[in-house]
Length: 210
Image (cartoon, rainbow, N blue to C red; front, top):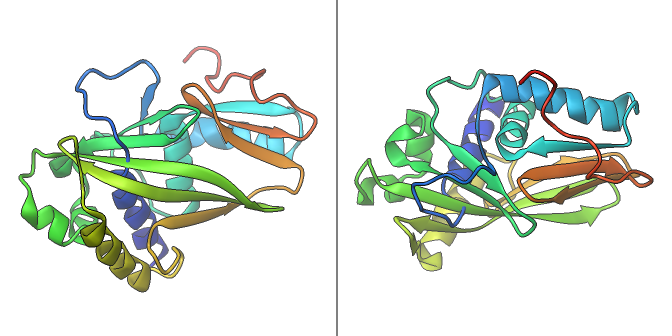
């Protein structure tokens, strides 16, 4: 069940952003197994061992880390899902055919209405909702650059929420716990984490030699 929830969030992400251009900016990253390792090391150094006051995790690594936290299993090396980050939102996009079969099934009517080569883009925002909670939520979906109608998106995602209680009832929210003194915010090409006294821009997410 937890693995399906992780894939459900991947389906949401790969259905949520807002950018379609085929040329990837240097600020985009790809989901990967190595990304889980890199992101975990940074998060642990800031929020667990406290050996660093701040950290910078690129978008692909952060998405990989969230999926690992949800128990989504090993990320295939062939998974061509791109994640970009700026100060306003997290943007995830890829072709429908690049999604795992289980994720395509979760998209239900959306997957049946379009060609497998269709580019699906998802717009995910970040919000601090409590002393120890941050919220990642799906604001909308674009199909080949056109907004997916809300009157179709709402019921579709509510169905996902009913199947996977780790998400909210709307199926569009994922809540992540952080330390009381921790901060998580979106920056230019990366998710920035820090303790209150730290400056999220001071530590790079890319280990030496990458």
